Image 1 (cartoon, rainbow, N blue to C red):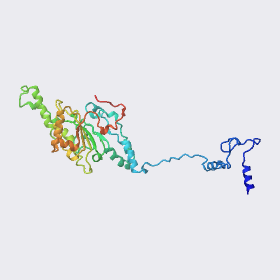
Image 2: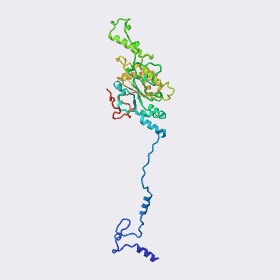
Image 3: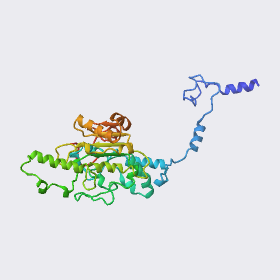
Image 4: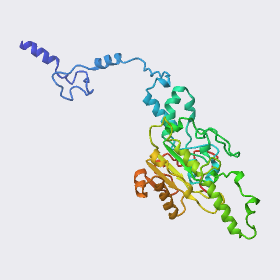
Length: 356
């Protein structure tokens, strides 16, 4: 037993000076200079060799295979629709000239155009994407919008100077949530058959009436015509009455979210006054908008007149109207509700930038 132990110990002794210099397997130090342990651990190189043999000889790249868009979950598809179609404010074509008489087009160039071609992919995509497009954008309605499709009434004759166009499909009457419209002099059309002529002055001497009095007589007659919603003259009553048609849509089951009304160019046909009392607001109590922004007013007196007429048409007080429908007088700058979509650089090349 003792001889065996001695033999093992001798076999692991440090080499003498005359022996060949060797190195250990762990740190390559010279044996003899550094005291060595009695038991040297076995080499682990075979472990690394085995691991290397298990690793693949060639790294393969993942193969990306195409997939159908309609194979995605509907929730993912709706996120794609929102990214392509929700741009904050939607402006219609051929409206660049309107920047000169309304505040609503002041920042038009800084809002991106929606990618409407996605609506033409297929019927399923159209049915899924159109409600998102109509409900999550603010539609800046152009002049004469109430005489365009889908708002135009059947059997209604439009002025000859008006070129009819389709603003959006009939689903707009169901899904529209946010509207921007103007009370504008250019929406006033008087019946040519009712205009004044020489026969008007047969009952009294033309020269006996002063120039200013003649103007007042003609002006009062114009306002009388504009205060009647008889289907002959085109006035602001028809504009607001068309907003009210959203009430009678049997498919619409939700109130409006936001309405912006611009009074910048709310002048009479002659251009001598601003007859804001000719605007009707009875639709408010039926469509129940949660926010109404008023822009383009000239004086505080005008603002009080507008609030007073709104409250009177809805059988309530101005304070209650403000609390219930969020009515507020806003300055020319964009509403915070929509300005988060506005870019720092113009997005529409060749279009007018700014308000002149």
